[in-house]
Amino acid sequence: MTSVILLKTDALTKTYAGADGELPVLGGIDLEIREGEIVALLGKSGSGKSTLLRCLAGLVPASSGSVTYRGEELRGANPGTSMVFQSFALLPWLTVQQNVELGLEAQGITPAERAQAAAEAIDLIGLDGFESAYPKELSGGMRQRVGFARALVVRPDVLMMDEPFSALDVLTAENLRGELMELWESGSFPAKSVVLVTHNIEEAVLMSDRVVVLGSHPYGTIRDMFDIRLPRPRQRHSTAFEAIVDAIYQVMTGRPAKPEAAAQPGKRTLANTPLPTAGVDGMAGLAEIVAQRGAGEADLADLAEDLGLEVDDVLALVDGLELLGFVELRNLELVLTDQGAAFASADVRQSKLLFADALTRAPLVQFIVNTLNRSDNGAQRAGFFCDVLAHHYTQSHLERQLETATDWGRYAELFAYHADSRQYRLEKAAHTHP
Image (cartoon, rainbow, N blue to C red; front, side, top):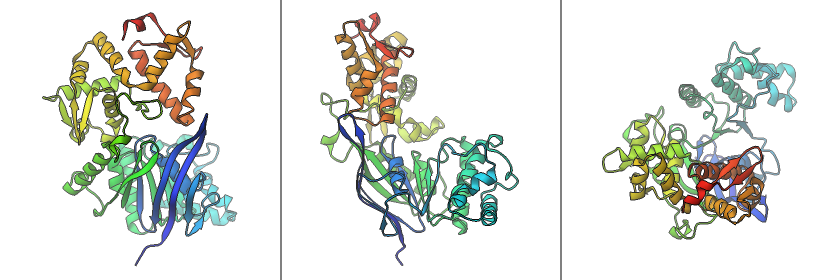
């Protein structure tokens, strides 16, 4: 028997207004969410997964294409969904009971009925005894339980979760994930389906029946889908589990399907070469660790496990090192280039010089340096760079791009940034670099 299609997107696109036109975020998304499944939307930062979730929830309108709920095109908020946020989003002046009742109150449910329904949701999610507590009295894990109870009390068709465990410590997140999966398997889960946004590959494989991998070259598209047919509870270290995780790693760390779509040296621009959110210390540390592993190469998954991290935690660092020409990623093998080996073994001063040379591959950093060199006083306001980036990025991405460029340029001593005046300035030390 074919399961009911609860949500569907057809050729969904989403763009936001930029300084000189529309900035694409999602491009041509075709997706179905069926009754009885957990679907994970997985991708790196900037792949559009949270935007897609909000389009499915009817919180963000499509620019073109359509989103339908039970066959009806959405024209506003989706009545069949509820949301759990990363930031808990509780009202601090309300008790646990009152926070959980909010959705029911908005639906016009009588006080007696919503009190009863909230009590049942509170019991279901393990919050008994905390009904009269305020959010400030609760730990992060308990606050997120309130968020789940508030979302589930309205018994939605589809529960939407936007990185709901990322603000929690590892043990708390693991415990809450496990309890939710037990509840799902018990048949008592108040929602018919779940859509989970995550950047954590293992989390996606642990929880979902289907993993949708989004890519962002140059905007969010579905790169691949994986059906997860492993029995629950799933064992992280089983051969089958690791094989699926490795296959997803391969897709997430791979190049675009069309090689010509990748930014090539000499063709890099502000638009096609965004800077990954990677700090200099993190990249230097990762390069040193790879250099210590014999031939200057390491299996990415094994390396992350040895460090006690998820592979997702090091992907941005890998992207940064790859952009700068310090590493090459061959399948899942991270290999230091000659420049990368020199960077990994250099003292602080030499490291800065090598990093400055490598920044010729980072268009935004070079644009800042060139602008300062052309300025009469070697200075420029940050607002100028914000205005230029607004032609290519949304506001949140713009801010992250400029933060990363500032961090990299400061380390290489190419320029200084003065927060009080919001001004970049070319310093004398910068003139010693190529």
